[in-house]
Length: 437
Ligand code: S3P
Image 1 (tube, helix red, strand yellow):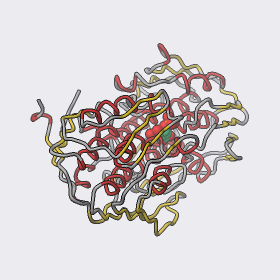
Image 2: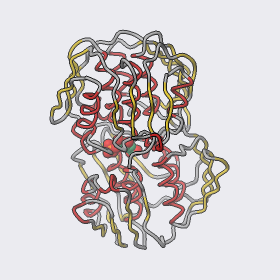
Image 3: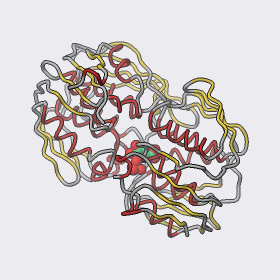
């Protein structure tokens, strides 16, 4: 159901300093791993957003006590999971359902994991297949949620993943914590490594060798304090906004710069973007730092291979940058975009077309000849947070007014997106659902 709208007008320049909410991937993991750990886990800077709240309420549904000091600071009393009395509802969260399925597969009690219609459309075979090879009793109609999981004895496996996916890798490694023997996952590309970093910090016997990760069970997870750095994937909207909006000069602080996540940064630099990185240090075992972004002319780029997985969530907003770049941009090997919250190649090409853009879809990517001029129009967020925010960024450089309907989903990952952009000088206002057509 469409709710909320952003009304965006052409913007002269973005200025000032901002932070972004905590990293979504780390926030999901912090509550799940904290639930498994012996002792008390404190999480600071936790992302209080639609997707992560679903993971939090699911672990509470497993009887784990959580004290909420404020929206972003939590204490988790972990160590024991109890049979849930209800279906665990992961709402729209793909990371939530896939990681939790790995944990649930190894429990001595059953569970049902489900979510919204959107989540029910997403492929689950990618986790069901390897979990079943481990011995898991997991069933689903047409390999889609709801997932019904029954107790089973798991054994360690060696699994070569057909696609680079941190969710699949993590689901298997988490099941591996409850298996007999070691579990090895071999990934075809460098998918984000937050699970490996966090589990290692919690004392799990985990070895990384090239693209293969092995977890050997037997050690109890020890509670850790986590301080969650700002989400690079949320920063990406502001980074692209400043790159393409004339006269912009913004600074973003406390941003997670884990290099399995920052493919967009490398690509924008290759395109001629004016971005400087400073104050790089470690925050909760993750590199974090400050980014200064100034407007500059961009040139087209070709993207494929490992870079794709390092910027997989950033392609919707990258499309907007590519529309501003001189020359032909070609993206290949990005077929995973078709099974995200929406088919992000199709949906973004369709929505940007409403602004007058011409984008050629290919099976595994797209081609954009730039620069192109955009004209304001009424567009839709498709209940996909990254689509809604990307279309808002496009609205900053479109002539006249752009209305992004179904914009509330931005809160699935970036609560405060519109306020942050407006504070930097973005010409946008939020309208609530009542004012929609
Ligand atoms: C995530 C992994 C990625 C990413 C998603 C978050 C994670 O998905 O797109 O937003 O936290 O593990 P895939 O594993 O499907 O690539």
